[in-house]
Amino acid sequence: MAQTPDQISLYRTDTKDISGKNTVSITSYEKNGAHYVYAGGFEDIDVFRLDAQGKLTHIEKQEQYKKKGPARGMVADNIKGTDFLFVANKLGDAIEVYKILDDGALESVFIIHDTEETHIGIGITLQVIHMKNDAYLFAGGLEETPGLSCFKIHTDGQLSHVQSMKDTEEIHTDGIIGMFVHQIKGKTYLFTGGFQDNGISGFQVFENGHFKHVNSISDNTTDRYLTGTYPVTGASFGDQHYLIVGHRHHQYYKRKGFIKNTDFVYHGDAVSIFKINKKGELAPHSIFKDNENTKLQGQTRIEVVSVNQQEAIIAVGTRDDAAIQLCRLDGQGQLSAITYLETGFPVYYGLNALEIEGTSFLIAGSFDFGTRKIAAYRIGPTTPEMQGSSLKQIIHLKFKKEADPNRIQEALAEFAHQQEAIPQIRELQWGKNSSTEGLDKGFEYCFSLSFEDVHAREIYQFHKVHLAAMRKISPLLEDQLVMDYWVQGKIQ
Image (cartoon, rainbow, N blue to C red; front, side, top):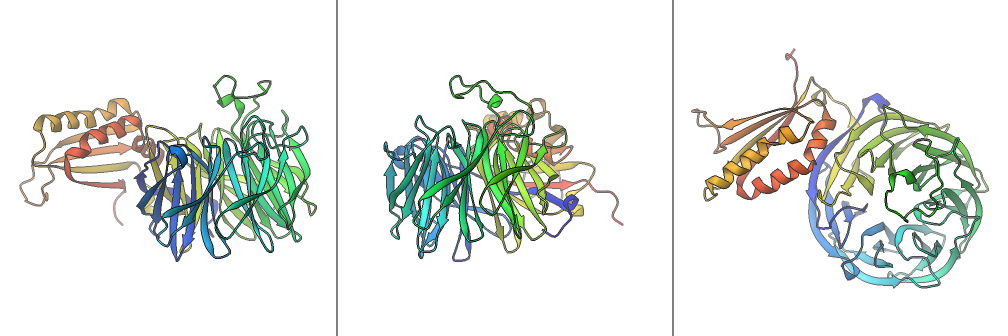
């Protein structure tokens, strides 16, 4: 990511359907030189392979325990030579462990259920911590008796309970939705966000997996934005260590009784940066406020896309703005905006960054139950082919010979109706092929759509009216050809 910020763009490379009812969580893992993506929602986990061009190939779907889920927390890691995927089954009140096979597929090997001693009921977030001799899985959730738990990970994937710490007024572990680990001066620190109790806490983790509270930072109504603390991540530049914390403010939740403390004040949306000293203590450092040029409302996932000695590129996924905001974190711990992309669907924890052959990618999933898709995005320099006066999409359709002519006309009419229902379509034209050159390759109909910008195209692509039109027309098609291009001026 050597480009200057205004040269970096975020653009979609592929889209795929998922088996789960929606996408709640996404993680990725590299095995034998291949990159695998795990998309978890209600009932199923979908496994994909992502190539260097950003194309997704579906491998399998894995049914979750009791067909429950959603697979809220997911983390993949290597434990003493064996690759595992750990899954927090939210409504199953359990943690599932899967072995990752050579082709990226999953094999269930262990499950541990919630007890009065642990805090994995309504499991949401998992974090693997490697110590000198052993690895541990930390778990947090959202339940009546919240807290933080640690389990030792054995070489066969089994988990054994090490320690649990019940939530109190002094720590923020009521609804742990984000966790992050920093290694500082040879010591290991785990940081948790408390969604319900509006703050963040730091813990020192010891070699045997036990942990103790270090300090906590609570929300206020002036210079902190921790009401509904949600995603937690971090970055280091030499001896400077930062924690990056987002929130989905409680004002965005409309369900009665879901938010425990309804006495809150909304004073905007922002990403908060905290500095960490050598003792693992947190201190407020800087804030990056939302404005008319950013998309930070309802932050649900923050991913570090890349990091070097001078800066880190950060991606913020938002449920309420339905967008991905790219930011730059400099060595002094200050965030600034680069660009954003309106995805056309709400991002709800389902966002993951990975790198293939030096290229950065983001995988995002739609939380909307009617969409049921994930998308891959490449992050890189803006090229002339990505700019122009407007964006056009040309669609060529070839129908099956046995397709009912009446159903074809109904499907064409519904496809043409999109312009009335989707305001992001600037212009839509269509017609039947009348060429006499014999070069049409059997394509019978052509649609031409025009969009003002890439945001409009993304919103159209995942709009419920467009998805409904595609579900109606796709079964009738023998083939289709789609091309997008930016309208250019004269070739010099």
